[in-house]
Length: 494
Image 1 (cartoon, rainbow, N blue to C red):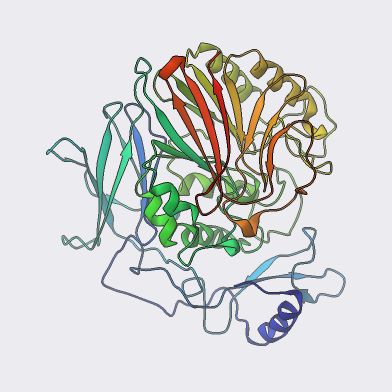
Image 2 (spheres, one colour; image 1 turned 90 degrees about the horizontal axis):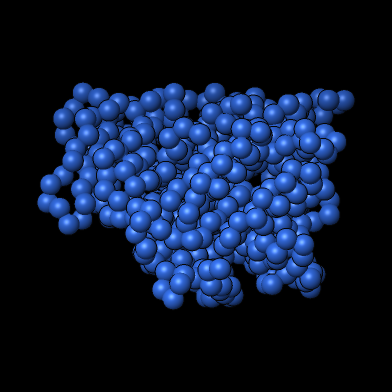
């Protein structure tokens, strides 16, 4: 539900007359489950391992056609509550319409106790591997992660997730899925993957979520990368429970739920799914209410199919290796003076990055960053390596990447698509752009800089194809939200 400014003011006036505290008892129960309404997430897949995330839910389906909550802030001088004005607002709190609570608002998917197990097999095998039944963790939003071991490289696996109650033996819900494991480092094979970023819940463009996901699902990808801003906490996550609600409502959307059951995925965290815009540890603010930065990091790991560290690298055959980096956990304050001590990645991650890149003999090396390394970005921004705020560390990273053959950068965070080439180092960076047109903006279409090889202020998605034929090539295609190809960058291996 979206409002213009006048309707927001009217709505707020009426809303304040009927709001109840967040402690309202749920009005919705269903004793037949548990169910799997938030689906599954298949992540951090290597040649031999995969992390499968799932969650038990009280109801079979998400709540639709219900009102949404609203965040209100308190003026410290007058004590009066008001809707959001700026990110400097004080004492953020979430309120629900009369008769509703966190379990009955729009997009709600309340969790449930119970047990889950997995069955999985290679698609050309008749023998299923079966995990033991495991109880979900109520402290982790009623979720459970399974780490599958001893997988075979270069294979496609069928997956069956099953649910049951704590005391029952009958299966109460099932979800079928599939995923692919990477080929080993000696196997040269064509690889096609896709990337997305900046997924605003109010900016859906499909009756069931987002247009890009049915399109991407039709491509039978090898894998998918979400480069951050998977959910946006800023407006509604004023406590930890509402942070989990943001994940529940996003991944219970039918387009999202279907896609993520069918593809190997790798997820990165950025500011909006760590805490709020441009955030870092140490900010003193009550804008996010009871929700803290450290809670944001905790919730991310609880919600994501990630084994441990959020920076990691994966090899996809002889010709491709990707690096996924962490830009929030270790960063210095954005307001700190730039210099050798100011960092986004932290010393340990930078050392890991350089060491593993040097050790790789992959034909193509791709750094996938939640924020830009090359840009250009808006002048007023100061939280990424393409800005002056972190220029020193950005230069160290750019010089290193320039020393590598066939290394490219893919970035999230920016709400417009571009392909740019650094004027000094020659590094090419691909900005994915947001996953809906409603979320596009932040740059003027006519502002084409010398660095731009392609610029389009639009939503959509991106695919990358690594083809070993004829000595090896990389093809990066930008698409509209409807799956129309907008641009292609192609280059041979050097």
